[in-house]
Image 1 (cartoon, rainbow over the protein chains, first blue to last red):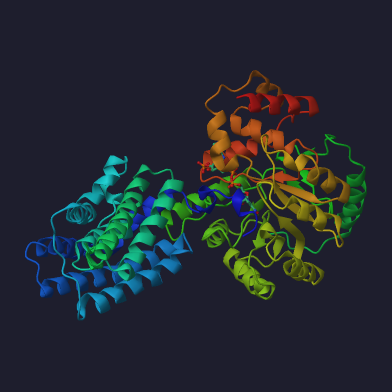
Image 2 (cartoon, rainbow over the protein chains, first blue to last red; image 1 turned 30 degrees about the horizontal axis):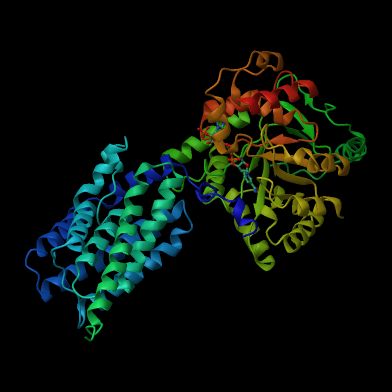
Length: 232
Length: 312
Ligand SMILES: NC(=O)c1ccc[n+]([C@@H]2O[C@H](COP(=O)([O-])OP(=O)(O)OC[C@H]3O[C@@H](n4cnc5c(N)ncnc54)[C@H](OP(=O)(O)O)[C@@H]3O)[C@@H](O)[C@H]2O)c1
């Protein structure tokens, strides 16, 4: 792109907020009652955190794989793509995330999702709860009707945010392979919402930032633990 | 769409217009007012008269498969044609805007007045013809009245394609487009070279007047029609001026709203053939076409208008 410095974020926004929110509304009507299953997956994931076992970890990973594939196909590919051709790049990324969850989340060395003590545990649980349960409330808080709300397992933002939360809770090293797509999605979505003049842009932006910070810190801690103790 | 072969009258008009265009002095008014319809200006290369207000489709017509919004766009088009509008501008870059235009045209029974202005926007010259054909199919027109190389992307290759299409009678006018002051030096270079393009599209409004320095005089000199895009800075300009009362002098230029003040500033520049505000609202399209009626500001008033808006 020539003279890239002369472009602002809003130069890339190619649809009006009204068109976007109506798209969400029409998507709800089209996929209903898939919401019941999606919310069921979300609540089950939260419930399974209570007594973590490898088998329960596998169940969470499979549910996330299904939801990423479903949101990528139904929302990004079939619906969002009608007003934003760039969604055609998002959909394969969502499919990749689904495949990664199946591969890394169910094989040997799969993560266990558990709420540990400390900041990371708090952050993970908070993001998971925001994504699964609280995110739809952003619609009425922003002056939009409930039917234009974004719902976990149906719309990409709450799905990505809850996924980030669960990944922060996953035992062992935070897996960058699994974090990359949701973090990227949250960044793109925050930029889009910002260009639309929507204050809720702050939510995906903050989620991505906090998870990156948490991952960086956990990486450092892991390194510190591996280092031999100082000789005296 | 205008599909008749260019007749003798139009050809003679074209010669007269080309000769006349070269002799134009700044701010000399060449607009023609028909008793019932909007003010028109001739396309210098062919003499064909175009209403000075057209219709843009960036964002406003990208509504995907939303049936209700598609009908709203069709209603905007209906009001546009009813008020005497002709030129609709779009691009394959505008998401679903082209099929939405096609839908509207079908609903309206393919209005004969349409002046179909589209663009080619693809990095590869070889893929230009395929993209143009797809756009033509989406609009549902036999041929385009104007095709512009969007943002000068791969312009050497695409211009060759468009000129060949025009030569073969598969296109009526050839143009180039840019916006927000980008690549003006290259635009000038193309305008100054041969064969001469019929149209150039640039950003021009009461605050973005960079085009006045070289592009607009060059267009007059070379007999090139000018389409002014972003008349309201994508709505930002109108939102910021609407906080202030309408100046008393608006009545002198026959403007009853800020939108009409801003549009009358643009179309009163004698080099400008038409401005292409985009809108999703019937009331706004009527208001915008209203700017193409009544008196237009003269040079002194234009200076006053620019100073006033700059001071807000
Ligand atoms: N490089 C290029 O080739 C290029 C670049 C930019 C633009 N363009 C062309 O130029 C066209 C116009 O530019 P643009 O769409 O960027 O912006 P614009 O026409 O300056 O502004 C469009 C905005 O103005 C509002 N508006 C229109 N009429 C109004 C009225 N009477 N009162 C109040 N608000 C009004 C519309 O909102 P409502 O829907 O609420 O009316 C819309 O949000 C584009 O659509 C496109 O076709 C071409």
